[in-house]
Image (cartoon, rainbow, N blue to C red; front, top):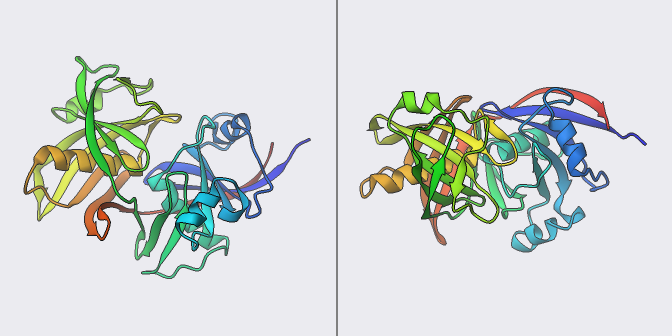
Length: 291
């Protein structure tokens, strides 16, 4: 039996998603169906699929409500291959825009809402030109070796956790970054238990201008391949570069990705430093698909 799904296509700096509304949690799609939606040749196409569901109506949502009873909405996010993911920094901004457009959320500019994710509750603020999400506490620790196609020698990477796992690799210049072939997943040794997104970064010259750090990044996302942008990856890349820069490194960063530019900043909170991500969110078109 086929099922018809009304969907919206959206993106944040080129990181694109198929979104659909299921407040009651009645539509359960398996990995193959989710991957079919994200397929760029036979489906709608996207780096991931986002279901808008109330936290009270799915098992993972109970933890979100325990953490924050105001987290009414849960971002049920899956990668392009149908596998679930903890968080998506670009996706949660697009999710906010989608909830507003569907009339499921009233969020004036300057106000903040709690959103449940598999990585925990995230606080999303609407800004004049998009959204900013508090990705929460972060961990910068651990090293791994990374091999990638057209990277002449393996490079050391720094492990960064921002609700999902990343390994960040510094390259020498733009030419080395441009030469990378990320059509296949980089090989990370040792590989974290749940895999990792891998970011390759090059610092701008100068690294800091007007108190803001600047880097350029490309990324291979587990379960999706190379994407035009990765929000949590941009945060991880900025945090790694900040750690490499040492004392005196700025807390504000601009990260240039193939799909545009996002902002990253580190702020002090009562429970320690948090990392925040800001950028645009665009809804492109609507449609209906049968599965």
